Image 1 (cartoon, rainbow, N blue to C red):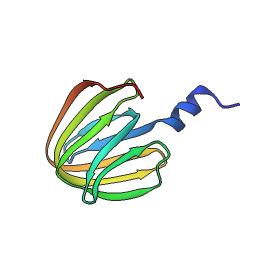
Image 2: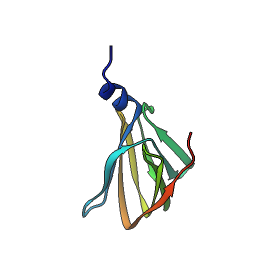
Image 3: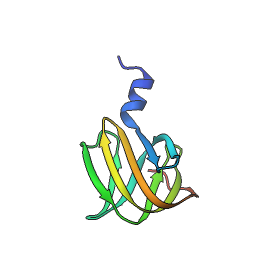
Length: 104
């Protein structure tokens, strides 16, 4: 039988957003929507490993408690592996809470 902690870690995604100066965000999230060079991409727990460029725009961060944060930025790179999404970003960064989202 699996513990609740094991189930939670399998069903959540660790998100780290890093600039050259600091760690902007580091927490478990439900999912993230990235503006990539090929369009918007949703990243959930257990996503296939990948690396992609992220273009200037807004990263939508959906927390486990249904809160939404928008992070406006210039550009960067994203890597997904083993339920860890790491985004390295450059330029201006503006993180803003948008409130609660609708229940799934």
